[in-house]
Length: 272
Length: 250
Image (cartoon, rainbow over all chains, first blue to last red; front, side, top):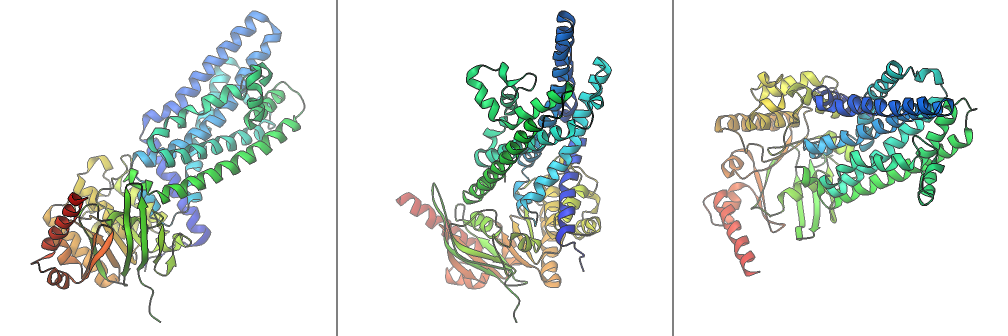
């Protein structure tokens, strides 16, 4: 008699199985270190050095620029790692032509997403950890000195990263390999508009309304305010939380729609 | 009370932009029955199979697996289904045992490693357990794919071209194991294949599709008699010729 798990236990083990599968892939794909360690290191050295240079030239007023850049790069990598891990996790299934095999299992869609996101958390810890360590060693900037107040900001950015990844997965389901580039590219559109390293008022006027509409803008603004020692910016956090919740709901609805289109048009044959 | 059919598909229709791929297909597979789904290229086999597995949504018609209606009860239905296809690769960066363990977990198995080793043993391939996907021949990958399909002792085993890349001796081993799984384990089999000899040896019923419709359904002997041919290959060639002729007329 084959013993099987049912209910929540079965879901738990399915989530773990997917996470472990992506663990194997990561472990055996040295080039994946680029996303998790190399790009974070490049970013922190680039923006950290710009900040130090600016602080050296303009004195104390500009020392805040260095702080903004370093806080920005740490928080940026929360949203980047969350997004890239989930989106490339699904892309891995398309590259290995596993989509069909996965669809013919009892696994539910949310279990798959949870499994990839779970392993994505490991990548996120590695990526953000790399940024934090380099910032500490190279620029004597300790992220821990900012305190626990940064956690809700990071949590909102994490959820935003996942929401953007769900959009990307929906696009890949619908448009196939042509949409892959978005997995890496989409956040580089979001980054300048979100005022990752500067207040959104620094954007050209025409782009400001777009920036204001993004939940990431308010999360980064909250992070900067908190970093410079201002009281917890509840208003910015609240706007970011509502925006993130809306984005997640829209992303989930879009993904569900694209899954229905994927099944209705027989697009699974692209991956078999 | 009779057990539900392993598979009951009724009135399946699927239109793609290029035209109608499946046109009102009814397909029932009884518990423990071994059925082949045959037809020339473009007959609608793969689309029918994908609709039966819930991977493609039919434009009309219904699919029930082990009494569970798709797509509503997909998770329950799939718990009783094993699927393997000769054309589906193994992931490059996983060992065979890791791959089988993962699918065992997805099927809900408590001891996926034991099931994986038993499945490999069944096909005479326990030595493949530590191999990486990149280290195996296409035949070995096919064998692992079939092992994956039987891991959780499914009640319905769906195999698309299961022995396409296997040497004759390995193909025989697979057929023998599949018959045993069906005879002793009670699993129903739904198989597509271009190897008519294999179908005659393995399946007790054959469903022929042509231009998206069922054109024959019966035992291999009944079908060859009905079409006035010596064997299933003769029927296959006859249907392919008809398709080509109709295509030329269009």
